[in-house]
Length: 246
Image 1 (spheres, one colour):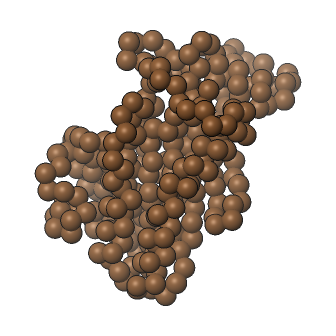
Image 2: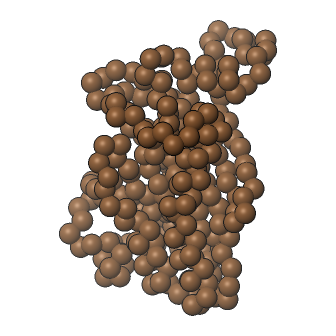
């Protein structure tokens, strides 16, 4: 058993960054998004934010003071990872922005194919101490775990949620969804130095995902160096914009 990475998002926080910056013309003429990409639904524009999603699994969103680029990762194919280059181009096109931080958010799934209560039992029998507090009311208790770790380069926030998902053949699978947020502060004078530091933080995404996998596989699941299962691993719903936090 090992975690299957299903989504990675990269987020930039900048002071006074307006969501309106994330408009199709800016994205196309700045060469951030190729002109031949097709929407999977029409972009959504409001005073509080912007959402743009494409049929290749890449989603862009903006809220006051932050912009997020997310990419779905297939469990069977290995598509080219694109959003790191896209976010770097975005930062380069706004060299005088007051960048504050970069977030790298991997999201993965651990399915329990042989036990329809596997995720619940993992949380309540392996992670939690047994006690009468678990049995109260008319249904089993539900839990969302929030953890924070202090790492050398920044902070890791980790959320663990129980889920019921459907496989392609319609079977229900018990699963745990692990959502990580690596928060890297940005330093340097506003301008070239700050943009360079933003780029350096973004380029940490591969080592960040490797750290995330190591934490889950070795410290939670008790395994190391095990490849994801080749079974029909269900896909968790995409993270909501308000979950892609710094």
